[in-house]
Image (cartoon, rainbow, N blue to C red; front, side):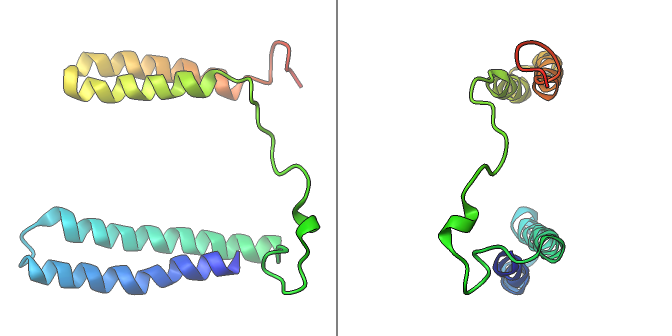
Length: 133
């Protein structure tokens, strides 16, 4: 993860000067552009430091070592539930919530209610039913 952390931390040295130059080119009148670039620089710092601290805690991965072998990354990486319908319901809830911004604010309340149900169902999917642990 050291390469990734330095890649993101190096983005700060690109995005900050670009934001300053962009701000000077628009005479600091167009707020969205240079502020978005400054926020991108801040996000680059946050992700870079997170990856840096994670790399120090976890240690070197096979991709970080010169003598790393392909077979060292074999095996299960995480737990995924391919039969789960909750991500689909969660995406539908987000779509309804964002549609509420265009259609009417009352639609957003429906999206928030469905979002609460979908998130609760996804979190507790393995607590009850056939796949309980």
